[in-house]
Length: 165
Ligand code: S3P
Image 1 (cartoon, protein in one colour):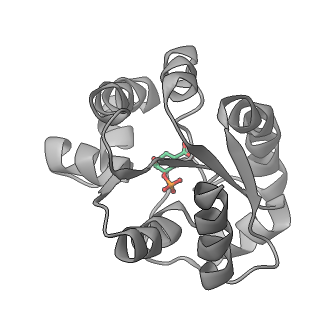
Image 2 (spheres, protein in one colour):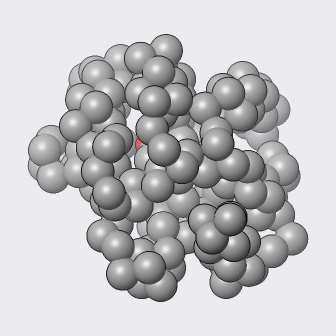
């Protein structure tokens, strides 16, 4: 199962819960990249730029997309056509959808994750990124799960119900 969605959609949190419930390993793509680069993603962006990061992200997605694990991706994973092809070939791609305003407030409240794509952007600028990505998530998704007015537990339950069908 692969979880996709914008920053703040809850991919890591939901992934963790699903992993516990299903007894299936969780692989976080950003964590895999951090293990390789040995520095925070924000620092890597500053030193080498976004295209270099996207290349790393692609290599890890290519390596992992068929694993029988829960894979939580970074929000920009759908940006390249190569990644979208990999996602379309994968089983059970779940798009965690939320309205932009919900995501914006979650991103602003998150003091732990430094997100280089969101840093220094006005809400309008980040919403433009959201609007570009939205159809890309939809294009790759086997299932779309709305998260706005649902608790983590409820979203997890919705996904478990989908998997049972
Ligand atoms: C990014 C999202 C981040 C991380 C990187 C780039 C993006 O992951 O991969 O900072 O382009 O949206 P999260 O979606 O887990 O924050």
